[in-house]
Image (cartoon, rainbow, N blue to C red):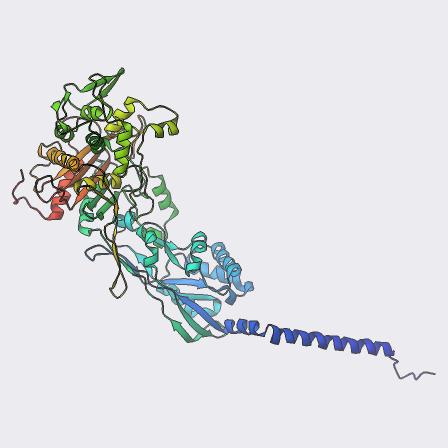
Length: 630
């Protein structure tokens, strides 16, 4: 009989238990081997990274000056908030995002998405979650209650500031937080998701000079993510500074005149550019109305953005380079030069403008008055439309053969029309330099003599930007060299050392007779002395060409409620060193006034002429006590 006090255990059960124990020890041994030997270095690195963190230190962005040392863009102190996803447990993410939203003024969903996206990309790299600079008090709150914000760090972050925002926004542009697309394009250059990057203007154009080089700080932290000590520091290298060709004095003078006309309702929008025709250096560039670029740095409101986008005057567009307009009579430079270069006209070519109407093939083409007999200088100075109809398209009634549309297009392109000038700003328009093949390709229609007549006086299909027009006249003023206009003068390291200097860059030498250019300069000077370009008591030897262009539609209203299909005024000028026709000018200027004249007449004054005289004489420092020029 079995002993009632004993429990019998079958030997096979003991065998299974023993085998199970052996298997468990084998599995544990293999796992320990994997953790300590096979992947030991990897897991040791992870443990170390949880204790020692490498934090990027952003560099100060380079500042921007005008040619005289006036500060145009600087960095003001601020604070930025970042999150390192690996230091923020996923279970706490929602609570931390909710607390952060109340401090930094951003939506919970936006903060959560930024953290999750970075957790997927690289959880060990911080992501910036604040979209505008934090106040000092808010920054202190996050630092002092760090236990409530695991993974969150606060660091000094310079805030870009523009002292003259609306004046310089078309030139300088603005910076902003790097977006996903920009990050993808620049991550190989060392950019991080918490970086600031140039978005438009010179901030975008010269990002490579302005940005600087990232630094790094290795810190030891405790379990509550409090920093214990700094283990190592690689300081950031500040960005380089830009010195521009712009003269702040001239910029203010020109902007004040153009803006006052907009405010007084004399024109709806305006653009003005001045340059040194001997080098291509841009001395002033104004577009009004404009926008406040500081708003894009601190956070532009939806309402403000909507207002800018819906404004028919397009304040976000740099009208000096990004919009194109009919050049009107300023284009007679091209027609005249093509006629002179092809032998169609000389200085002594006479056209009898005894009527205000030229009738060809049953169509009437008008002039602004009956001038009588005109030679080339008189035709240019008096801006006779019939004279230039004849030079460009000929006159079937008299048998005079004009230069023709292909020649006009050839010399127009030589002067830079129909292509960007290459100015160092983004968003430059190409303009339109049409010819018969262009019309056929664009509209499927043949070119007519009427098209040539309209083109000859800067109407019809031809369209230019203010910078193109100025650059073409600058080439005439300097004797035949077309320069690339530029705004950068030099780049300086933080210690003041010049690391790059932008010199004159020649696009091309004009393939024309220098004597023909001299005739254009003489005609421009005559336009002022006969008061066609009315400059009473001028103290400088101005020369230039007026233009009145018809543009728009025959119905509707402009931004001020006035009827469309009004006229816009141009004046392109240059100032030689003496009252002669030598190519010595060191300043040239183009002014465009949108919707500034309601009619065309022989006594109407072009307001762009008076603006030019006041601005340049004030800039040059001449006074009424100076002797008047002949």
